[in-house]
Image 1 (cartoon, one colour):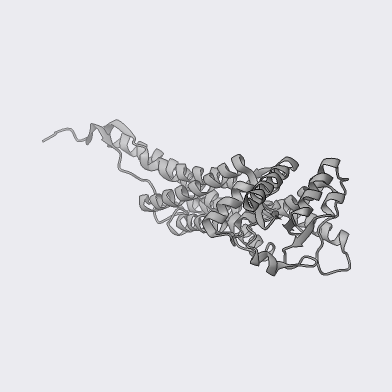
Image 2: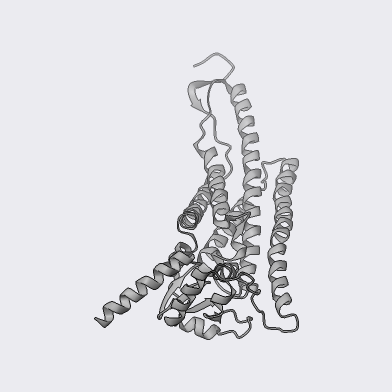
Length: 347
């Protein structure tokens, strides 16, 4: 029996864990990891293959009628020229690290119970800061996701499977953090609880305000373009083409016209407008434009659905669909390939 009244703890012993809810942290690691994989894949495809890659991926996952390519290629899908999926990927990685790191850290010490108490106090302080950052991150993600879903449903009036999955993951992370006790429990002091709650509510207010400010410009631009072209009409028109066609574009448009090419788009689609500007006013005047948005002028939404248009813009050349914005050279190559196929069928 040890006669020393001071309790000693064996060397290399581990301080009892004061980490908040390992079970909740594991759930958050799982949810955030799935989100990181999804947004990481979308970001990789967007950076390496562009709009066509995104539309092909969406078609492969949700079928040719899927419209996630339309959403992920819209003006709402990027901030400062960087895809939202990349921001989402970074956010999921941060949450994964925040949720996982306290469970991996092992604080070892040599000393008595007083030393253990000091170490535990340090761990409590670190855990408190970690929980606050988790609340800030997950609250911001959930708030932003809800806003984006509202844009998809009520502004774009379409669906996006990838977007809905990511939104569900973000909201689930916020729910686990808030209802799992990250905001405080009976072991927390009242000041800590107030601070953590404030750390969650402030991000909610800040994210809401920032999101509205960021996307108000996108919405105002779309509205301005529509009302400028047709101020007295309920039906929305795309902005007018102002670029003059080059000789090369005119020759290409004649080839496209001979192949009964059609151009599927939407009045609000920025990539559609950029495609038209690339070819120019005279060249696009030879090509049949199909408005796919229900609110667009001379809308042929039913035709777009019947043709299973995967996203905007989409070219139809000799009955074959080619989604995505194309350069003049890419269109020339498509026309060449189509003519080769036609010649092979005749032979």
